[in-house]
Image (cartoon, rainbow, N blue to C red; front, top):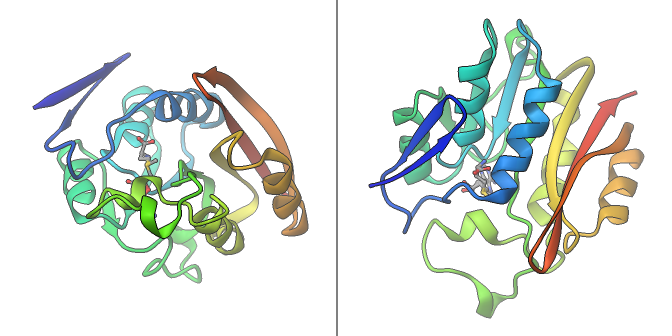
Length: 202
Ligand SMILES: C[S@@+](CC[C@H](N)C(=O)[O-])C[C@H]1O[C@@H](n2cnc3c(N)ncnc32)[C@H](O)[C@@H]1O
């Protein structure tokens, strides 16, 4: 059993063959989320994986309402076992935006961001952790298209991307969808730079 410790949080990973093991990208998003989140906020994490980022927020902030989604059933079970309320679904599907409790102050996503051809796909559910389609932005673009409907007025998103994903392309998409886009964290890690982009609804 793999265990990850981070500040006050200890996460258990049942099976790293099926669930994304938190890494530098997860840590950078957690750091950015800790700076952005405030007590009392309603927060949604899309693609929670092991539940690491959500668990860090729950351990460090009082009185937040946190919900997560995850497409991979192994990861959804793992996040639940780590104390996170998870809906197993594709992005936002099944969350009705017309209900006031489904409007969030902050939405987080560390998406699959690697440009991936048919031949490069990983077998099984773990592929969802990496496969960003040919552009590396396919899942992220769907997320950005839909996120607005789930935000409160003035709400924010935090997305983790890589220099491979194309920072300028992501910022342009965010702007075209009515977000003010700012880089709030960045870190060079081996062959790429990890970047957290904040989008604030205008
Ligand atoms: C790079 S991993 C990040 C996991 C975790 N948030 C972290 O930071 O350690 C991406 C996660 O998003 C999930 N995911 C990918 N596509 C999804 C979709 N369409 N809907 C919900 N979750 C998705 C994957 O299964 C995976 O757990």
